Length: 199
Image (cartoon, rainbow, N blue to C red; front, side):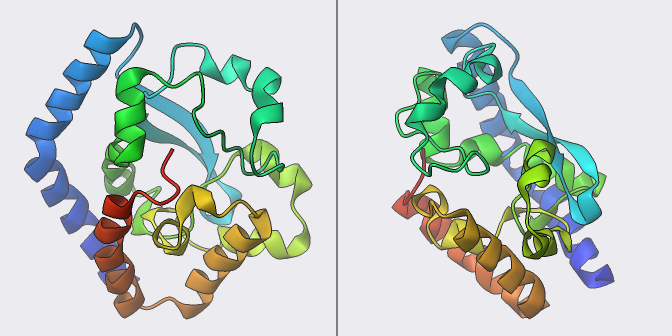
């Protein structure tokens, strides 16, 4: 685990340095496209059920969270724990592009540096979801959440069954090794380029 943390620090630090010009361009594009902040911070659940503020580039209009309830009927998964809407009307023009190429996730490299996320791990979900968890669902809280993971390289939003998401997250935890992390990292770029389930 110390090696995993060292890889996280090195990868996130070098990654932020390497893509800093891209981050600046994205920030400018967001500001020019719609009013509101560049970044969007949201409370998520991490390892052991601890909450943290996950960073993303803002891809929706200001106040989008307040509109979630009235758009619930458009949720393609039918499960509030996996809220996914293709062609979400709240998403901005720049936000559509960022989501398509997963560029909105890049600020999570800061979360990796801060120690509440890893480069590879289960995806973090909302604290409000925990009340609807069954016993086996809590197994996915056994590791630091990741920017990428088995869910992302297996289809992302095209996987609309929450049980499948949990199964992939728990499979990662049970099978974890440094080699598995490397395999997932190598599969992440092709998955992003395929854009399967990206919206």
